[in-house]
Figure 1 (spheres, one colour):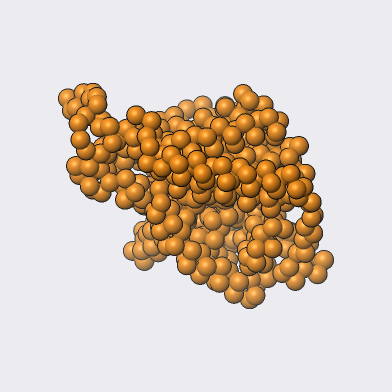
Figure 2: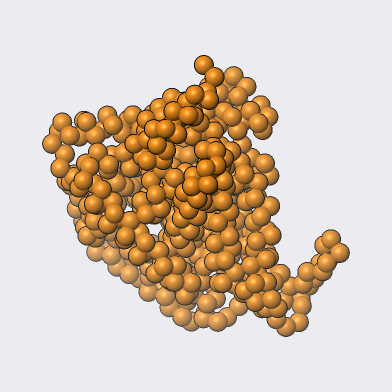
Amino acid sequence: MHNSLLDDLALASPLREKSSRLKLALVAAALLVGVMSTSPVAPLFIALTMSFASIRLGKVPAGFYGKLLAPPLVFALLGTVVILLFFGSGPEIFSISLLGQSFGATAEGAELSILVLSRTISGTSCLFFLALTTPMVELFALLKGLRLPDSFVELSMMIYRYIFVFLEVAVGTTHAQAMRLGYDGLLRSIRSFSMMAGTLFIRSWEQGERLYTAMDARCYDGRLSLFEEKRRVEVQELLGACGYVAAITALAYITRGTSLI
Amino acid sequence: MHIMEGFLPHPWWEVWYALSLPVVAYGIYRMNRLVKERRETLPLLALAGAFIFVLSSLKLPSVTGSCSHPTGTGMGAILFGPALTAVLSLIVLVYQALFLAHGGITTLGANVFSMGIAGPAVGYLVYRGCTRLNLHFYLSIFLAATLADWATYLVTTLQLALAFPSATGGVVGSFYAFGTVFALTQVPLALVEGVVTALLFKYIIQVKGDVMVKLKVIDEKGLGKLREAIPA
């Protein structure tokens, strides 16, 4: 369960020491280029380079990275199948018959579904790069710097802190229930799950009351001060990031409108 | 039901951002006022947000085998009202995108709209409507949670259909197409979530019913009646 939290890997990442502002800007730029691109070439290039950066520079095990990428891809594939079968006009390139109905795919539909699929892979790999190299703690200071309302950032920080506490409680309770055959069969599973969730809510409520008392006792006035660690941006890093963004923008511009089919 | 990063093309992801931002801003405004009035609100809201995240990252007892995480939107709306739920779900969705790779940043606007605004709004209205009709408390909770889930699912389908209209049937055609594909998992899932939410409220009422009175989910009289029904 805990392995699936990308934040744990980010805390151990060698790229953690790099400036979080630079990483955020780089990922934002790559996301935008990917989603704006009109051909699948640039998104696929971004996906490859971002995955390479996560695995080689970020030292994420390649097998684990593959496993991470699988569930988002399933959703994307489901959606693209719909686009493939229902979108576009013109001559059909193939058709299948299912349950007495025939579904056909046109070249236009195929093109669009490849484009959407490539954009999804590109966006997901950008997110993974950010998630696997930048721990949330580093982003909070940045959020305050962006002038988001204090109460909002504070709420985010407290939510973040307690996610890990409750996850432990939830996983522990679920294991204990499973040991007592609580998840044998659908009805029993539903019962056990609700019981666990109810307990979790009550625990979180009581914890919230305790947290308030504890913070009040320490003169909490609705503002936690944060210390943002200023990390130096090396000239090469800045140049590299700018070069990368320029390269993907140029690639997206040159290949605009081209298709792989 | 999250829309993946990069799935919505320009200009649709911007449109959903534009629609969601005012609601979230209003939610933050409401929250700031509440926090000024009663300072214990912020920690409690934070813990509720963490609870929603943890709940949504756990797998529900699954029926069809695929993606089966509860959304918790109906529950959030019943407990805190739609405006605050919009703020909480924005934060939860960002964390889901960054920790679990559910959803994404460009599609955040669309996801906040379907899961943080439309779903909770429907859930809240259904719950209030049911209480006015004097339906049984747990039945109202079940209906609110299930219908909130279905509303989320319909809005997501609409978002996809608007972005990718079908060549022959237009938006309506692809609405049916996307709808059928996702109905396989979403329809039974929402039912399960409805049952789970109702049972969850039952346990909370049994153990710590005063919380529900504090949150104005139920009044003292209703709580007393539900408590009587529990066999000693």
